[in-house]
Length: 143
Image 1 (spheres, one colour):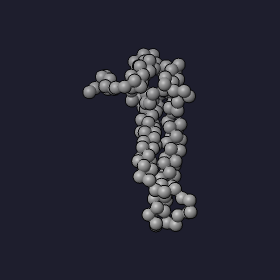
Image 2 (cartoon, rainbow, N blue to C red):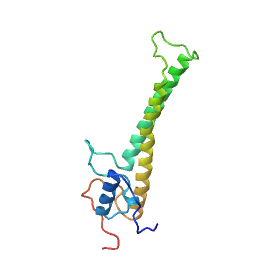
Image 3 (tube, rainbow, N blue to C red):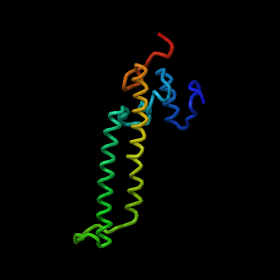
């Protein structure tokens, strides 16, 4: 696949990203994560710095919940003293936690994608952060 051919993408937000990138005169790699508000009740976080902060917060929350679940499991196994009215160990706790881990993982993936796009935009002399659809950059090869 050459640089001139767009990457095949599927899904609603993938199509919106392609349209928004084309409207701004960017490649999909330079565009990064979807910057629009369709399907969002609040203004989305889509800058590399914002995604980094969100990723750190979600990771800290995931580690904290994981430590709490490990303490509960250790108390239930008799490895740690359990308080009188402690929460009993239930297997669904780990299943729920594993599902919860998807949030920080996807957050780090989006951060990496946006950071890579930010580096490409800076190398091309474009703004570090694309805030809204009104920020259109000049087309390649045009003055």
